[in-house]
Image 1 (cartoon, helix red, strand yellow):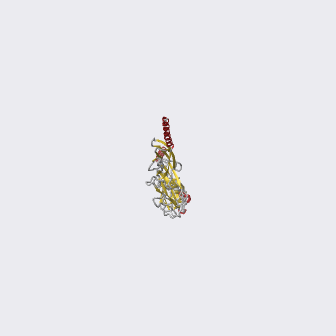
Image 2: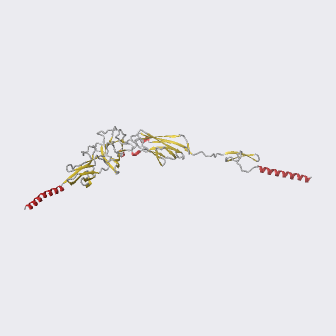
Image 3: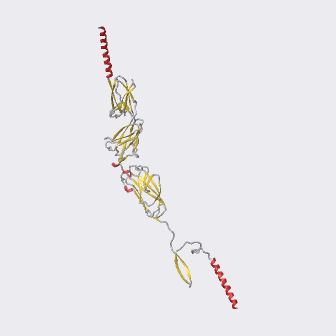
Length: 422
Protein backbone atom coordinates (compact mmCIF):
# COMPACT_ATOMS: atom_id res chain seq x y z
CA UNK A 1 0.00 0.00 0.00
CA UNK A 2 2.74 2.42 0.91
CA UNK A 3 4.50 1.76 -2.41
CA UNK A 4 1.30 2.22 -4.38
CA UNK A 5 0.58 5.45 -2.56
CA UNK A 6 4.03 6.77 -3.34
CA UNK A 7 3.65 6.02 -7.01
CA UNK A 8 0.24 7.64 -7.05
CA UNK A 9 1.56 10.74 -5.34
CA UNK A 10 4.47 10.96 -7.74
CA UNK A 11 2.17 10.73 -10.73
CA UNK A 12 -0.13 13.30 -9.22
CA UNK A 13 2.72 15.73 -8.75
CA UNK A 14 4.16 15.10 -12.23
CA UNK A 15 0.93 15.72 -14.13
CA UNK A 16 0.60 19.42 -13.18
CA UNK A 17 4.23 19.96 -14.12
CA UNK A 18 3.76 18.39 -17.57
CA UNK A 19 0.55 20.32 -18.10
CA UNK A 20 2.26 23.54 -17.12
CA UNK A 21 5.13 22.92 -19.56
CA UNK A 22 2.73 22.07 -22.41
CA UNK A 23 0.65 25.13 -21.68
CA UNK A 24 3.78 27.32 -21.71
CA UNK A 25 4.83 25.92 -25.06
CA UNK A 26 1.39 26.65 -26.50
CA UNK A 27 1.38 30.25 -25.30
CA UNK A 28 2.21 32.95 -27.92
CA UNK A 29 2.91 36.65 -28.08
CA UNK A 30 1.81 39.05 -30.79
CA UNK A 31 4.45 41.33 -32.26
CA UNK A 32 3.12 44.26 -34.25
CA UNK A 33 3.95 47.74 -35.38
CA UNK A 34 4.17 50.16 -38.30
CA UNK A 35 6.71 51.43 -40.79
CA UNK A 36 6.32 55.14 -41.46
CA UNK A 37 8.07 58.21 -42.81
CA UNK A 38 8.98 60.34 -39.85
CA UNK A 39 8.59 63.90 -41.18
CA UNK A 40 9.20 65.67 -37.87
CA UNK A 41 11.98 63.28 -36.80
CA UNK A 42 10.45 62.61 -33.37
CA UNK A 43 10.49 58.81 -33.75
CA UNK A 44 6.72 58.54 -33.32
CA UNK A 45 4.00 57.94 -35.84
CA UNK A 46 2.01 61.18 -35.89
CA UNK A 47 -1.16 62.13 -37.71
CA UNK A 48 -0.48 63.03 -41.33
CA UNK A 49 2.72 61.03 -41.62
CA UNK A 50 2.90 58.44 -44.38
CA UNK A 51 3.08 54.68 -43.78
CA UNK A 52 5.56 52.62 -45.81
CA UNK A 53 3.76 49.67 -47.46
CA UNK A 54 5.18 46.30 -48.46
CA UNK A 55 8.42 46.70 -46.53
CA UNK A 56 10.36 43.47 -46.09
CA UNK A 57 10.92 42.40 -42.47
CA UNK A 58 12.55 39.51 -40.56
CA UNK A 59 12.18 38.20 -36.99
CA UNK A 60 14.97 36.16 -35.41
CA UNK A 61 14.91 34.06 -32.21
CA UNK A 62 17.82 35.44 -30.18
CA UNK A 63 18.27 32.14 -28.30
CA UNK A 64 18.48 29.85 -31.31
CA UNK A 65 19.60 32.53 -33.84
CA UNK A 66 17.00 31.11 -36.18
CA UNK A 67 14.84 33.28 -38.47
CA UNK A 68 11.29 32.52 -37.42
CA UNK A 69 9.47 35.00 -39.68
CA UNK A 70 10.41 36.48 -43.05
CA UNK A 71 7.69 38.49 -44.73
CA UNK A 72 6.45 41.99 -45.60
CA UNK A 73 4.39 44.64 -43.93
CA UNK A 74 0.95 44.92 -45.47
CA UNK A 75 -0.10 47.50 -48.01
CA UNK A 76 -1.01 49.83 -45.22
CA UNK A 77 2.52 49.74 -43.84
CA UNK A 78 1.66 47.72 -40.73
CA UNK A 79 2.78 44.22 -39.70
CA UNK A 80 1.38 41.59 -37.29
CA UNK A 81 2.97 38.24 -36.34
CA UNK A 82 2.31 35.67 -33.57
CA UNK A 83 5.33 33.83 -32.12
CA UNK A 84 6.10 31.44 -29.30
CA UNK A 85 6.14 33.08 -25.92
CA UNK A 86 9.38 32.97 -24.01
CA UNK A 87 12.35 33.92 -26.17
CA UNK A 88 13.44 37.43 -27.00
CA UNK A 89 13.18 38.34 -30.64
CA UNK A 90 15.09 40.64 -32.96
CA UNK A 91 13.14 42.46 -35.69
CA UNK A 92 14.97 43.98 -38.66
CA UNK A 93 13.63 46.01 -41.56
CA UNK A 94 14.85 46.64 -45.11
CA UNK A 95 15.27 50.41 -45.51
CA UNK A 96 15.55 50.37 -49.28
CA UNK A 97 16.26 53.95 -50.37
CA UNK A 98 15.54 55.46 -46.94
CA UNK A 99 17.47 55.88 -43.71
CA UNK A 100 16.49 55.33 -40.08
CA UNK A 101 18.04 55.79 -36.65
CA UNK A 102 17.41 52.12 -35.91
CA UNK A 103 16.97 49.20 -38.29
CA UNK A 104 16.76 46.54 -35.54
CA UNK A 105 14.53 46.36 -32.47
CA UNK A 106 14.43 43.78 -29.61
CA UNK A 107 11.01 42.71 -28.40
CA UNK A 108 9.73 40.33 -25.69
CA UNK A 109 6.47 39.50 -24.01
CA UNK A 110 6.88 42.60 -21.88
CA UNK A 111 7.15 44.93 -24.90
CA UNK A 112 6.01 43.39 -28.16
CA UNK A 113 5.27 46.63 -30.07
CA UNK A 114 7.86 47.99 -32.51
CA UNK A 115 7.53 50.88 -34.97
CA UNK A 116 10.23 51.78 -37.50
CA UNK A 117 10.69 55.45 -38.34
CA UNK A 118 12.00 55.93 -41.88
CA UNK A 119 13.65 59.13 -43.04
CA UNK A 120 13.68 60.31 -46.66
CA UNK A 121 13.06 63.73 -48.19
CA UNK A 122 9.89 65.61 -47.40
CA UNK A 123 9.28 67.87 -50.41
CA UNK A 124 6.55 70.47 -50.19
CA UNK A 125 5.62 73.85 -51.60
CA UNK A 126 2.98 75.89 -53.36
CA UNK A 127 2.00 75.93 -57.02
CA UNK A 128 -0.53 78.55 -58.12
CA UNK A 129 -1.26 81.43 -60.48
CA UNK A 130 0.52 84.44 -58.99
CA UNK A 131 -1.87 87.06 -60.33
CA UNK A 132 -0.06 90.07 -58.91
CA UNK A 133 3.40 88.62 -59.38
CA UNK A 134 4.57 89.36 -55.84
CA UNK A 135 5.77 85.82 -55.15
CA UNK A 136 3.37 85.27 -52.24
CA UNK A 137 0.25 83.10 -52.27
CA UNK A 138 -2.87 85.17 -51.56
CA UNK A 139 -6.21 83.64 -50.63
CA UNK A 140 -7.82 84.66 -53.93
CA UNK A 141 -5.00 83.30 -56.10
CA UNK A 142 -6.05 79.99 -57.58
CA UNK A 143 -4.15 76.72 -57.98
CA UNK A 144 -4.03 74.95 -61.34
CA UNK A 145 -4.89 71.42 -62.37
CA UNK A 146 -1.44 70.46 -63.68
CA UNK A 147 0.48 67.65 -61.98
CA UNK A 148 3.81 68.23 -60.28
CA UNK A 149 6.20 65.39 -61.07
CA UNK A 150 9.29 63.96 -59.37
CA UNK A 151 11.49 61.39 -61.10
CA UNK A 152 14.99 59.96 -61.02
CA UNK A 153 17.00 57.14 -59.47
CA UNK A 154 16.90 56.21 -55.78
CA UNK A 155 19.83 55.42 -53.53
CA UNK A 156 18.94 51.75 -54.07
CA UNK A 157 19.54 52.31 -57.81
CA UNK A 158 15.87 51.94 -58.69
CA UNK A 159 13.90 54.15 -61.05
CA UNK A 160 11.41 56.39 -59.26
CA UNK A 161 8.45 58.43 -60.51
CA UNK A 162 5.68 60.15 -58.58
CA UNK A 163 3.25 62.96 -59.32
CA UNK A 164 0.60 64.88 -57.46
CA UNK A 165 -1.80 67.82 -57.75
CA UNK A 166 -2.01 70.79 -55.44
CA UNK A 167 -4.87 71.01 -52.98
CA UNK A 168 -7.43 73.81 -52.91
CA UNK A 169 -4.92 76.06 -51.17
CA UNK A 170 -2.25 75.45 -53.79
CA UNK A 171 -0.11 73.27 -51.49
CA UNK A 172 1.48 70.00 -52.55
CA UNK A 173 3.80 67.51 -50.84
CA UNK A 174 5.89 64.41 -51.55
CA UNK A 175 7.44 61.84 -49.23
CA UNK A 176 10.47 60.85 -51.26
CA UNK A 177 13.21 58.26 -51.01
CA UNK A 178 16.81 59.38 -51.00
CA UNK A 179 18.60 59.53 -54.33
CA UNK A 180 19.20 61.61 -57.42
CA UNK A 181 15.73 63.05 -58.03
CA UNK A 182 14.35 66.05 -59.95
CA UNK A 183 11.11 67.96 -59.62
CA UNK A 184 9.48 69.09 -62.88
CA UNK A 185 6.84 71.79 -63.21
CA UNK A 186 3.76 71.00 -65.32
CA UNK A 187 3.63 72.47 -68.83
CA UNK A 188 0.70 74.90 -68.83
CA UNK A 189 1.17 76.51 -72.25
CA UNK A 190 -2.26 75.36 -73.37
CA UNK A 191 -3.70 77.32 -70.46
CA UNK A 192 -1.64 80.37 -71.53
CA UNK A 193 0.39 80.21 -68.32
CA UNK A 194 4.15 80.45 -67.91
CA UNK A 195 6.46 80.11 -64.93
CA UNK A 196 7.03 83.41 -63.18
CA UNK A 197 10.42 85.02 -62.69
CA UNK A 198 11.94 83.72 -59.41
CA UNK A 199 11.41 85.91 -56.37
CA UNK A 200 13.06 83.74 -53.70
CA UNK A 201 15.42 80.81 -53.22
CA UNK A 202 12.39 78.50 -53.03
CA UNK A 203 11.29 79.14 -56.62
CA UNK A 204 11.89 76.60 -59.35
CA UNK A 205 14.15 77.46 -62.31
CA UNK A 206 11.85 79.26 -64.74
CA UNK A 207 14.14 78.53 -67.72
CA UNK A 208 14.15 74.75 -67.38
CA UNK A 209 11.05 74.22 -65.25
CA UNK A 210 13.07 71.82 -63.09
CA UNK A 211 15.07 71.66 -59.90
CA UNK A 212 17.26 68.95 -58.38
CA UNK A 213 15.90 67.50 -55.16
CA UNK A 214 19.02 65.62 -54.10
CA UNK A 215 19.46 64.78 -50.42
CA UNK A 216 19.09 67.98 -48.39
CA UNK A 217 20.81 67.94 -45.01
CA UNK A 218 17.58 68.70 -43.18
CA UNK A 219 15.67 66.08 -45.20
CA UNK A 220 13.14 68.84 -45.85
CA UNK A 221 12.89 70.96 -48.99
CA UNK A 222 10.46 73.60 -50.21
CA UNK A 223 10.06 74.33 -53.91
CA UNK A 224 7.42 76.75 -55.16
CA UNK A 225 6.04 76.71 -58.72
CA UNK A 226 4.42 80.06 -59.46
CA UNK A 227 2.73 80.86 -62.78
CA UNK A 228 1.62 84.07 -64.48
CA UNK A 229 -0.41 84.80 -67.59
CA UNK A 230 1.87 84.33 -70.60
CA UNK A 231 2.53 87.43 -72.72
CA UNK A 232 5.03 86.43 -75.38
CA UNK A 233 6.33 89.31 -77.48
CA UNK A 234 9.42 89.25 -79.69
CA UNK A 235 10.59 92.22 -81.75
CA UNK A 236 12.99 92.02 -84.69
CA UNK A 237 15.39 94.58 -86.17
CA UNK A 238 18.02 94.21 -88.91
CA UNK A 239 21.11 95.90 -90.35
CA UNK A 240 22.89 95.17 -93.64
CA UNK A 241 26.59 95.86 -94.19
CA UNK A 242 27.53 97.27 -96.65
CA UNK A 243 24.22 98.87 -97.60
CA UNK A 244 24.24 99.92 -101.26
CA UNK A 245 21.74 100.90 -103.94
CA UNK A 246 22.98 98.14 -106.25
CA UNK A 247 24.87 94.92 -105.65
CA UNK A 248 26.62 92.71 -108.17
CA UNK A 249 26.39 88.94 -108.27
CA UNK A 250 29.25 87.67 -106.13
CA UNK A 251 29.07 90.52 -103.59
CA UNK A 252 28.94 89.55 -99.91
CA UNK A 253 26.86 91.20 -97.20
CA UNK A 254 26.62 90.81 -93.43
CA UNK A 255 23.08 90.61 -92.08
CA UNK A 256 22.61 91.21 -88.34
CA UNK A 257 19.24 90.37 -86.80
CA UNK A 258 18.53 91.72 -83.30
CA UNK A 259 15.84 89.67 -81.49
CA UNK A 260 14.40 91.39 -78.40
CA UNK A 261 12.19 89.73 -75.79
CA UNK A 262 9.60 92.33 -74.87
CA UNK A 263 7.25 89.85 -73.17
CA UNK A 264 7.40 87.78 -69.98
CA UNK A 265 8.17 84.34 -71.43
CA UNK A 266 11.77 83.08 -71.64
CA UNK A 267 11.87 81.37 -75.04
CA UNK A 268 14.42 80.31 -77.66
CA UNK A 269 12.79 81.92 -80.72
CA UNK A 270 13.09 80.93 -84.38
CA UNK A 271 13.87 83.44 -87.14
CA UNK A 272 13.03 82.63 -90.77
CA UNK A 273 14.45 84.30 -93.89
CA UNK A 274 11.62 84.67 -96.38
CA UNK A 275 12.12 84.31 -100.16
CA UNK A 276 15.79 83.60 -99.53
CA UNK A 277 17.63 83.37 -102.88
CA UNK A 278 21.26 83.70 -101.88
CA UNK A 279 24.08 81.61 -100.44
CA UNK A 280 24.61 81.40 -96.67
CA UNK A 281 28.35 81.44 -95.99
CA UNK A 282 28.41 81.45 -92.17
CA UNK A 283 26.37 82.17 -89.06
CA UNK A 284 27.04 83.13 -85.46
CA UNK A 285 27.44 80.22 -83.00
CA UNK A 286 24.41 81.22 -80.93
CA UNK A 287 21.95 79.63 -83.38
CA UNK A 288 21.20 76.29 -84.95
CA UNK A 289 20.43 76.26 -88.69
CA UNK A 290 17.87 74.39 -90.78
CA UNK A 291 17.92 74.54 -94.59
CA UNK A 292 20.11 77.69 -94.57
CA UNK A 293 17.12 79.96 -93.90
CA UNK A 294 15.71 78.93 -90.50
CA UNK A 295 17.62 79.92 -87.33
CA UNK A 296 16.78 79.02 -83.72
CA UNK A 297 18.71 80.50 -80.81
CA UNK A 298 20.61 77.95 -78.74
CA UNK A 299 19.67 79.59 -75.44
CA UNK A 300 16.40 81.07 -74.28
CA UNK A 301 16.18 84.87 -74.32
CA UNK A 302 15.09 86.25 -70.98
CA UNK A 303 12.40 88.94 -70.81
CA UNK A 304 13.99 92.35 -71.31
CA UNK A 305 17.07 90.92 -73.01
CA UNK A 306 18.25 90.72 -76.62
CA UNK A 307 20.19 88.30 -78.81
CA UNK A 308 21.95 89.14 -82.09
CA UNK A 309 22.17 86.70 -84.98
CA UNK A 310 25.01 87.43 -87.44
CA UNK A 311 24.84 85.96 -90.96
CA UNK A 312 27.33 86.24 -93.83
CA UNK A 313 25.62 85.96 -97.21
CA UNK A 314 26.86 85.82 -100.82
CA UNK A 315 24.52 87.36 -103.39
CA UNK A 316 24.54 84.75 -106.17
CA UNK A 317 21.14 85.33 -107.77
CA UNK A 318 19.66 88.49 -109.34
CA UNK A 319 16.22 87.30 -108.21
CA UNK A 320 17.09 88.16 -104.59
CA UNK A 321 15.33 91.50 -104.33
CA UNK A 322 14.26 91.63 -100.66
CA UNK A 323 16.08 90.82 -97.41
CA UNK A 324 13.05 89.62 -95.47
CA UNK A 325 13.18 88.12 -91.94
CA UNK A 326 10.47 87.08 -89.50
CA UNK A 327 10.26 85.78 -85.93
CA UNK A 328 7.73 82.98 -85.79
CA UNK A 329 4.50 84.14 -84.21
CA UNK A 330 4.23 81.17 -81.84
CA UNK A 331 7.58 80.98 -80.02
CA UNK A 332 7.60 77.91 -77.78
CA UNK A 333 3.88 77.34 -78.24
CA UNK A 334 2.78 80.72 -76.88
CA UNK A 335 0.78 83.26 -78.87
CA UNK A 336 2.76 86.41 -79.63
CA UNK A 337 0.68 89.34 -78.35
CA UNK A 338 2.11 91.82 -80.88
CA UNK A 339 2.91 90.27 -84.28
CA UNK A 340 3.40 93.70 -85.89
CA UNK A 341 7.01 93.92 -84.68
CA UNK A 342 7.99 90.43 -85.82
CA UNK A 343 8.94 91.25 -89.43
CA UNK A 344 11.73 93.31 -91.05
CA UNK A 345 12.29 93.90 -94.76
CA UNK A 346 14.87 95.74 -96.87
CA UNK A 347 14.59 95.99 -100.66
CA UNK A 348 17.83 95.44 -102.57
CA UNK A 349 18.90 95.25 -106.22
CA UNK A 350 21.30 92.61 -107.52
CA UNK A 351 22.65 92.78 -111.09
CA UNK A 352 24.85 90.48 -113.14
CA UNK A 353 28.58 91.03 -113.61
CA UNK A 354 29.67 93.45 -116.42
CA UNK A 355 30.63 91.47 -119.60
CA UNK A 356 33.17 92.27 -122.39
CA UNK A 357 32.28 95.19 -124.68
CA UNK A 358 30.52 94.41 -128.05
CA UNK A 359 30.15 98.04 -129.33
CA UNK A 360 30.95 98.53 -133.15
CA UNK A 361 33.97 100.60 -134.39
CA UNK A 362 34.48 102.43 -137.82
CA UNK A 363 37.61 102.05 -140.12
CA UNK A 364 38.42 103.78 -143.54
CA UNK A 365 40.22 102.20 -146.58
CA UNK A 366 41.26 103.76 -150.00
CA UNK A 367 39.97 102.09 -153.16
CA UNK A 368 41.31 102.58 -156.73
CA UNK A 369 39.85 105.42 -158.81
CA UNK A 370 40.12 107.73 -155.84
CA UNK A 371 36.78 106.56 -154.53
CA UNK A 372 36.37 106.54 -150.73
CA UNK A 373 34.24 103.78 -149.28
CA UNK A 374 33.24 103.45 -145.58
CA UNK A 375 32.69 99.98 -144.23
CA UNK A 376 31.65 98.88 -140.77
CA UNK A 377 33.35 95.88 -139.23
CA UNK A 378 33.31 94.47 -135.69
CA UNK A 379 36.18 95.50 -133.50
CA UNK A 380 38.66 92.76 -132.76
CA UNK A 381 41.33 92.48 -130.15
CA UNK A 382 44.85 93.55 -131.16
CA UNK A 383 47.32 90.73 -131.55
CA UNK A 384 50.94 90.92 -132.79
CA UNK A 385 50.97 94.45 -134.28
CA UNK A 386 50.18 97.98 -133.21
CA UNK A 387 48.39 98.89 -136.45
CA UNK A 388 45.01 97.91 -135.30
CA UNK A 389 44.85 95.20 -137.91
CA UNK A 390 44.75 91.58 -137.20
CA UNK A 391 48.05 89.76 -137.72
CA UNK A 392 48.15 86.76 -140.15
CA UNK A 393 51.34 85.37 -138.71
CA UNK A 394 53.38 85.73 -142.11
CA UNK A 395 56.33 88.17 -142.71
CA UNK A 396 56.19 90.69 -145.77
CA UNK A 397 60.01 90.49 -146.39
CA UNK A 398 59.78 87.38 -148.55
CA UNK A 399 57.39 89.08 -150.99
CA UNK A 400 59.67 92.15 -151.34
CA UNK A 401 62.70 89.97 -152.17
CA UNK A 402 60.77 88.05 -154.83
CA UNK A 403 59.68 91.32 -156.45
CA UNK A 404 63.28 92.60 -156.60
CA UNK A 405 64.47 89.41 -158.36
CA UNK A 406 61.72 89.67 -160.96
CA UNK A 407 62.55 93.34 -161.57
CA UNK A 408 66.28 92.56 -162.05
CA UNK A 409 65.53 89.73 -164.52
CA UNK A 410 63.30 92.05 -166.56
CA UNK A 411 65.98 94.76 -166.77
CA UNK A 412 68.65 92.24 -167.96
CA UNK A 413 66.37 90.96 -170.70
CA UNK A 414 65.71 94.53 -171.84
CA UNK A 415 69.45 95.34 -172.31
CA UNK A 416 70.13 92.02 -174.13
CA UNK A 417 67.35 92.83 -176.58
CA UNK A 418 68.84 96.28 -177.34
CA UNK A 419 72.28 94.79 -178.08
CA UNK A 420 70.83 92.34 -180.60
CA UNK A 421 68.94 95.11 -182.35
CA UNK A 422 72.12 97.15 -182.71
